[in-house]
View 1 (cartoon, rainbow, N blue to C red):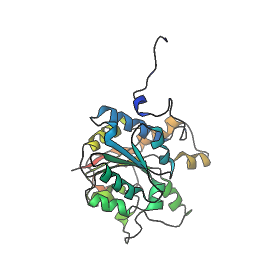
View 2: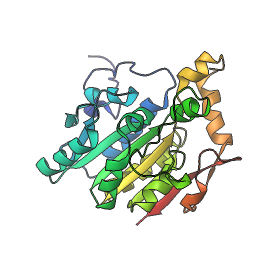
View 3: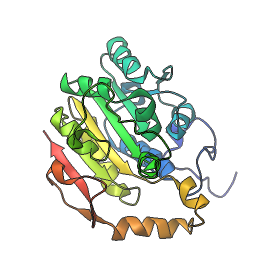
View 4: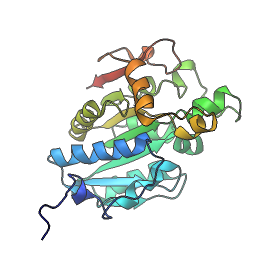
Length: 257
């Protein structure tokens, strides 16, 4: 027998001996998954009380297959409807959705906001990869608002998601970066206990556009930009959380109803 055996605290939740390199080195998605599993391990929740609802769309579609957590795969474009069905078939469980810009660009956000307004019990972990901002601002795509069927206003753009969910009555709203992993873990633990919709945004720009610009650098340098470019301000007014604003980006816990 070996002198010691190595175990990772997340091993009970991971399906494979070592999770595959599903994401680019330094990608924030892996950090979010790790923090989520830490929060689950520290909470009173059992794995049977969580249901991950997912589709193959985007990089977040690689999360659920690696985890020993009950999950339901949805056809692309029907993710939110599938989450409703999961709630009906597993009334005591909490559906968890890991979302990205790709999900919202394809499906829109209208149905999710309806569920938010109705008080549907869901946990949304939105990994904001800034892909929409990159494509939209550089006019590489035609403008496609996340809200597809309602006349848009500035407050309904995808650049201030906390404000959008605040106006639709979300019970819990927070925003962090992968660097603020302890605070993110605490927010997920708090969201586990909330009734209604919880929305946590994680600002984690995709590495591929940075690599194509020749500005990849080291992971620690990119993380450092999260430290120097953000300001923790709990209870900040959600009207002040536009990601395009000049100066430091506000992060923190904004709504806890």
